[in-house]
Length: 479
Image 1 (tube, rainbow, N blue to C red):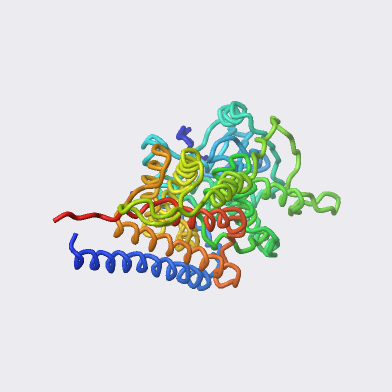
Image 2 (spheres, helix red, strand yellow):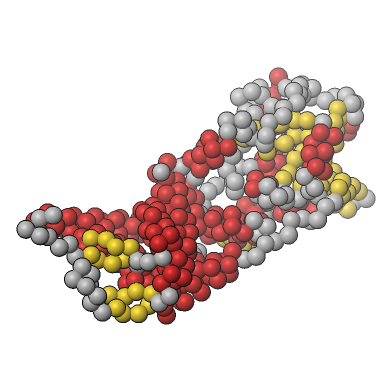
């Protein structure tokens, strides 16, 4: 019989010098801009050349005879356990497990492929997640312990008996025994292609001789991005973050087979799937004896994060744009330019909003750059959104704090002023290139929400900061 050990794991001067600095700084920012354009083009090329992932065949069990099997599979029943979405970041897609009841040996156990270890610390775990190091494993426990956890988390649980022949039960039982071996119990988790639900789907498909996959090859209308945004609706800021961080690999339409990475979708498909059991010449459904083990209200959807972003960013941007006014030459130490009316209020508002924007943009840029260079998640590589969000935007947070605390423009030397202007000009050109690549279809990444709700605010804020955020101070030298 299957030997079980319950596992509990839980789940970044002189004129010649002046001219040299100007040339080098301008060249630096144009180099950054060129790199970002090439990044966007490389992204579209890379994805276009990447074929859709194919389902890998399950490893062959070479020593079938060494696995001890029940004498009578009529005494063995398999149950599909489907768990609704939860309130944690890691359970917003729901969960799937298998319950195996062996009446002959008085055994009742739940097989759960969603176990992970956070004992390394949250920072290390998050870093490993970003790098693509996701070592999940199979855990086995009594149903009381497993179902009790979902009750504490207030998540609805459905249980359905799988209508399998004795031969199909033997194949599935053998695969579970193989999976329990020390060399097989840990696997490299992939949120769309190898997770707790796809493990059950693949093992069941093996028991059915491949029939589940062969009958579910048609494409569906939804994409992986659609499912990400839908399932993280209860944590809208996380949904927005994932929408920014993930590239166009998740924008292709799924097949019915791929869609079954979702627990609810797998159960829905199996409810309409016909088994190989017949009664009085009538084919029986794959799932029978369905029951709701426990029922709770699912998490409520939060506000659309893009609507909130538009309000938080665009309204202040428009207000500040109309607060700009031209100033005359005030003294020999300053020059004509623009300032903001009601400077105490306007500059502090500018500092507050730009501070948040620069911090978010810089962090997004850092994460996307790190993920491209270091992560095994191909869905995080060569992201078109790097044209909008740059790691160097974190520097803007320092200036924003100056506006917020002092309530006036930041005085900088002429050289630094030219560097800032060149930087903001690169940003403007990058934003226009971003829109061009999406609207012409050169890049297939779906960025419509960012383009509609965030880009207009960036297009307004950039000239405001450029014109009124900084004062170029003329240095007076006395000899």
